[in-house]
Figure 1: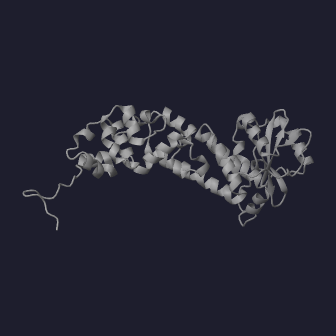
Figure 2 (figure 1 turned 120 degrees about the horizontal axis):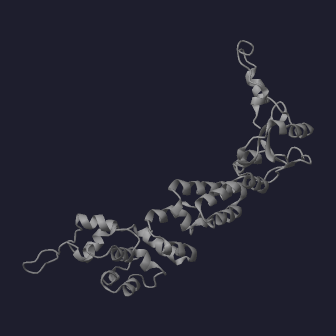
Figure 3 (figure 1 turned 30 degrees about the horizontal axis):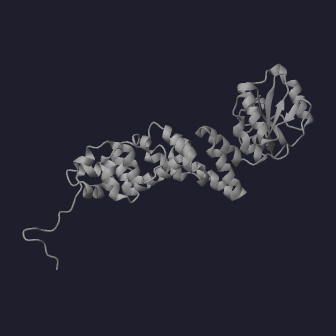
Length: 332
């Protein structure tokens, strides 16, 4: 049996107020035990000091909490965390007003200790726990790419992980890790996505025809990317059909210079699909003759596709169905 001194009851249990629960979240009961209601010392402290206390609690350094709140900041940080990473004092002032989750605090400390990730975090105007959690969604080789996590949505991070897993399945773990490490070095999220799309597309197979003196095949991923840059169009988005061998691309020497797309056809073998000059312009009518001559030398069909013929051969052909002109079957 436990006895209490005469006139005394059991010790009061420190219960957090609703305001403390709002501010300290999961740490509220432990903070209330250190600073009982109304928790004035904790609640009136700066957000940076409150974060430091919660960070100490997250790291199991409860005895240092009073020092973390009351001492001069350099001593407070050292007392709360032992040997803190560089930039922590500045980071504490950019973390908002509400306590983070314990694992988010621990992740922040790990990232601040990483040279590249720490540099990005130290220069950030605002630090959000959601950014750190987004890092956990990225492939492991991108774990320090804080600058990308800041510019991505959660969905974007998930897509990057799915792309990484796809490469692991197709090319093996070593190739996938090397690719993800390259993605992490991209300066912007958009640049990283461009690199991912390029890595997902396998290298192109040999072109169906070696071309002519004026019609040169774009026979590699690099050649397609280079042409997309020079012609300022969306040619780089055509990597998937090119990699699958569904389409092949040639550069016409002109005049005017243009990119020519020929596509597989179940009737004709290969047929002209599209021709585009810079900025997706069209080849003038009077300049098309030499190009069509070279396509004929290569055995490329110019006209309706086999699929067009297949779809036109139905009960309505010849009973009022308007047959489009052959030139409508492709664009140039």
